[in-house]
Image (cartoon, helix red, strand yellow):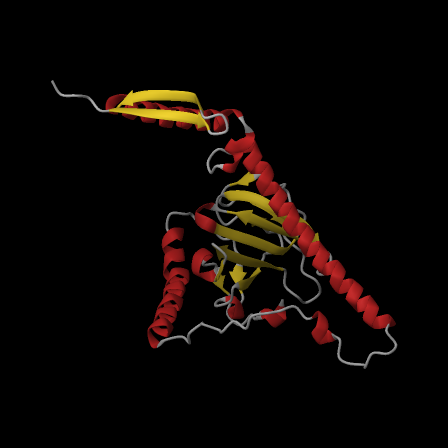
Length: 284
């Protein structure tokens, strides 16, 4: 039979030469006791961390509202630091102003904030970029000269006044002057909605602006009293105002302007009124 090894732990009072406490353990019991002591220490540490404020010292154990308060406090501290620096700079300036013994120097450099010289990293335009810009400009010209007439094909454009003729100089102008018969009336060139009517005191006549489909806009100037109101829908050929009467030897006329998506158009290319030979803008 194998003899088990036993260990004895004795606590002795040397002053009295007496055994105060003793413990006998085998190898197995010693291991179990050590494990138990370690587990007890771990449990005790976990309990202390969970039920005491010590948990706030560990990462991840701060509550959400505490973390928010902490961040807010840091922001306030930073703001206070900036305010403190400004106040200190102000006090230094005041001290320098009242210091009569100082040597006069340029004080602008003392209050000048630190700045970092940033090197301009924008590179010059390359040949490819210049060609691309040129191509886009040509495309915009194409949009204005080709796409606008294509969009106008689906609309019915009529003359702003039956029997009206356009002056010779207005055939290629974006601001066309159209000669109106004495008994004529102003009509809408196509369907749309009236967006503005007002009296122009500089020329003593009315002006009407109409928004049309597909981005078209028309403006009728130097006309008589409007017979439509702002926000009213009109159709092609509908009368919108009376014509102005001729004065002296001058002929009665109106001014027509047209746009599409912000691009000025030549009205003669769309309404095609009769051309008046020998009549120019000086006669109007």
